[in-house]
Amino acid sequence: MKGKLKKWLNDNGRDALGRILDTVGESTNIPFASKIIENIGESLMDDPELTDDQKAIAADIIKSELEELRVVEENLTARWVADVSSDSKLSKSARPLTLHFISLLLLSYFVTGYCGIHLPQEYTSLLIVVIPTVYGGYFALREFGKHSHRKNVR
Image (cartoon, rainbow, N blue to C red; front, side):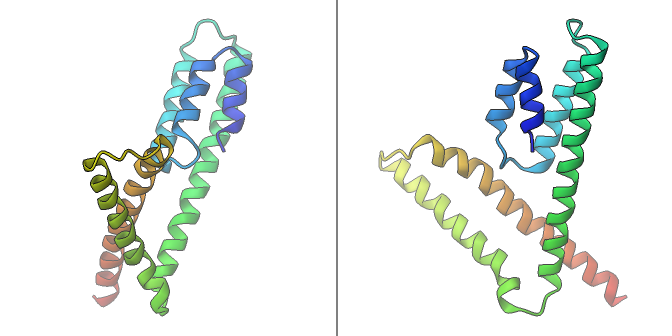
């Protein structure tokens, strides 16, 4: 997803901005990633060292990256809505089971840290991304389901 933008940044001497995208990673939640890409775009448009042609190319790449993120977000939302409206017990219980599993994982992470056992940085980075996504997705979709149900009842 952010590969074209990172390559362009590196090719045009903006390695620091490319490293920001590496730090953000592919698994960062979509609104956060979109905001970072928008901010990079703004800083590129204000950069006096870039030519107008370079700025136009960067703007096109950023526009396509943001469009890809928008499509991913729409597909994700559609999948979540389909899960909520399904009659399958498994599809309705997948989110609560995932929430419980992630909560237990977070608790075990705290316990191991308290006992002096520190997990590798990769696991910590993964938890930083996964936990807000799972909790946010669970509670946001749950609220959406409640509101859509109320509209159907009226």
